[in-house]
Length: 230
Image (cartoon, rainbow, N blue to C red):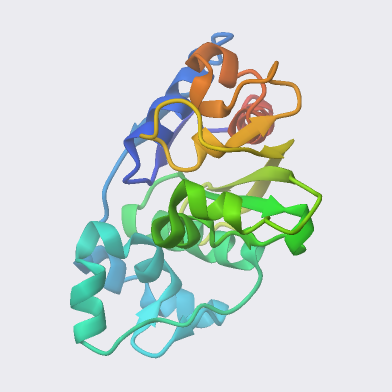
């Protein structure tokens, strides 16, 4: 089993956390990072078409990595807003398969979701869009009128050993509550998520070593580590 993989992400905080978690316990697994250029993306269209995950001129892979390639405004001007189809798991597999195809290497991609119990699981995988639109305060206001602040954070890592290989999923979940923002605001929704086992702290208030023992990302990555260590 390969002891290294390319983590395809443009999020420096995610990359840092993944590397910190991998280093804990001396797993010996090496994580490199790569951006994907437009030519590589377009070379993956045939693969994605065979998986049934294309919509119009854009593939799932292009949608997920468009921030690396262009800007949302440019895409809107071209009239090519993509429509994703399939479950979160299907999208994760298609995205990782395309990454392995584009980079010709073992690849890992990550999808996260923040699910509010009172809203039947929303925002779920759309949390990034919700956060960008309404902010931390708006996420709290979404629960006004509900006597329920329960939520869970979900991380899904997809691993593909190389071009043509079937991606494998590894999921981790951490239960918590949605609270008014506390702590640094430089890492997504961390300031409003207070894990049940976090001693009353939000993710943002925790030191990295503390968060990396209980987070949804840690739990999913531990499963991936176990698999790669076989």
